[in-house]
Length: 252
Image (cartoon, one colour):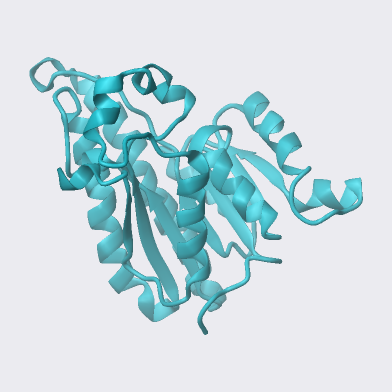
C-alpha cells in the first residue's frame, strides 16, 4: 500500500480529444498505462490517439496501437456508457473530464440550455461513475474515479449559475461516493481547476486584470492539472480528496 504504479493499468479518460483531458490521458500513457480516449468526435480522438501512441515506453508500432484506443460516446447517455464498459474490460481508473459550458443569465436561461448544462456536467458524471463502479466492484480489484470539477463550483460568477450548480454537484457526488464505494476498494476524488491555459481560455488569458486577481499572477497549465490527477490515482490512501488548482484564487 502507498504509491501505486500506473504501468499495466487501464484508464478511461473522457473529454480526451484536447485540453485538460488529453493532458491527463498523456500523463497516464507516459507512466505506462493503457488509455481509452473517450469523446464525441471521432476525427479529434483519432488525432489525439496518434499523439498518444508516441508517448510512454518505446514499443513496436503494433504494440503501441494495441495499448491505447478510442471510444466514441455521448456521456449524457447511459446506454453508451454501458457499451463502453462492455467493450473495455478491467478498467482501473476513470477520469471524468468531459463537460460543456455556456454563459447565460439565470432569468434568461431556457429550459433547453439548462438541461444541456445539467446533463453534460452532472448527469453524465453520475452515469459514468455508476457503470464503471459496477464493473470495478464486480472485479473486486479496487479502482479509482477522479472527477474534474471547476472553481465555479464554489466561486461562481454572473452568468454561470446552472454550470456552477452542476459542478458543485460533482463535488457532492464525489464526497458521497468516496464513502459508499470505499467498501469495494474504490477511491473517489476530484480536482478543481481554476483558470487554465487552454483553447477555451485564450481570450481570457489576454486579460491582465483577471491575472492580477490570481495570487500567483498567472493561469495554470494543463500539465499541472494532469500532475494532480496522477497523484490522486497513484496515492492509495487518497480518498475524498478535493484538490484546488487555482493559484490561490479561491482564497480571495
